[in-house]
Length: 439
Image 1 (tube, rainbow, N blue to C red):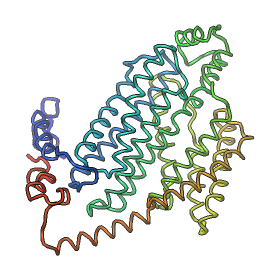
Image 2 (tube, rainbow, N blue to C red; image 1 turned 90 degrees about the vertical axis):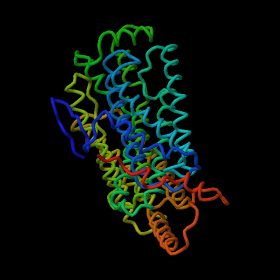
Image 3 (tube, rainbow, N blue to C red; image 1 turned 120 degrees about the horizontal axis):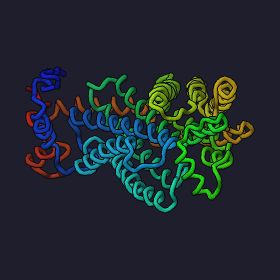
Image 4 (spheres, helix red, strand yellow; image 1 turned 60 degrees about the horizontal axis):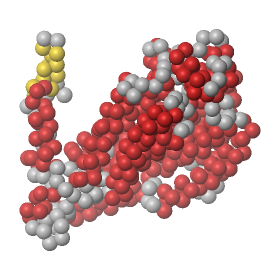
């Protein structure tokens, strides 16, 4: 991409004046805007744009939500707060992509399309419910409320649809290398882990909020503490700050992270298939938290603890996949990952700071993770969602494509049975009509 800078502003991109770019984008996209069923053959440039869009949407949502939770531990809630607006931009992109997938059928199969549509629907329903909840009940600082849970569930369904769409579709394009397929799939799983772990930021911020009160320098503004105290019907004291900061039982933190968070890493390891997949995804999430921490604190927002234990949990997952006996792997993995979670929290609590986590609950986390791990491996194997299954499918599609090149040209796959050339032409735009804009 070439940028031309004149008079202090960027005036051209790839030789195209900025004011002409919207028209060129519409010219490129309009031929694709045709009604189709999910699973239709998708041109490579469109497939790439759609999933770049998903990555951008989730990146904006993550940035907005990270800022949002820190914001709410300092100031009273504001519907038009900057983090809400940033999150909204990501949501708008996600909704636009959902409409494109649903209407055109491009870039997704039927299952991924349904996951995306249902996820977007749940998320959009949750927004007014959350606003009503705040209007009726006032301050709702806990990330574990029902209206907030709907936001996470909706986002999780969208992510699951995008993960499946990329997993199924990216192997059809020779230009998308095996390494790039794994990188994007791992990135989507990192977003999935962030979304699933997000409620636990309540405890990660709350433990430091309470410590700031004990030091006599609370991070929360007096107006926020007074509002919370009035809502609870009590004075602003330590008991109120404890209920405001850490309303969730101590047992929840490590059990939830050790079962739900680790299960996501297991799912990613099975689908991506690379040796250090789980460690890399956990590392990417922890690295993001380390990067966002000084930016937020430097901007005057409260700090949080960082879940460093995920690094040990991810390593435990990857080590378990070295076990050659498939039916023994979940048990060994549950032991290693649970040791990583609780051992990591113990070390972090002594060296830095960690949320309350009830160490005596480790047998519950271990047993639950073993069951969930078995379920993940059974489900992915049954549904053909393993890395090996993906490679087999890609090889089969490549053989089928080679056979088609030697066969007589016929109507497009997108055309209805018995339809003529006009229908095939409408289903897949002509190359000249969909080429990328150039100067």
